[in-house]
Length: 163
Image (cartoon, rainbow, N blue to C red):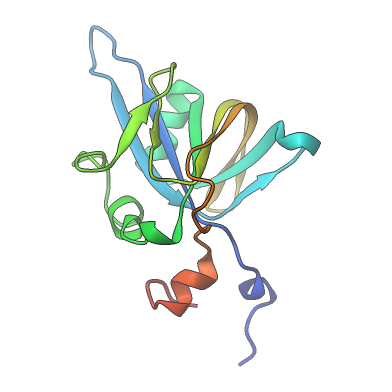
């Protein structure tokens, strides 16, 4: 059987990090996941669209806070696929033993990533089993410019994900 056309695309691998502020009734919450469907939608990188899987905890926090960071992962961060992509943040702290810092909004970013785009959600729309978050990029920060971008093809070659 022939492969599907879109299986030929090689997507960059990102972690989407987000946080909600604490309230008198609830502690601040944060989470991170893995996303491959992130796309620039304006010249100069001023806007991105981020596709998040509807059942994920991260999507709940992004909806509540309206903020997120798109962290571009490196080939040295393949261990995050399991930790951030296959484990649920509702019942565990994904940031435990994970090198990170908080931006001025209190939103985490991964300090060992190539860098991150600090985003504010403008619009959301449902798209199949994902929701699309159209975001304004507030700031782009390069942390580790000499690292190699993690891609879906790299993960397939290392047999970390299936093709």
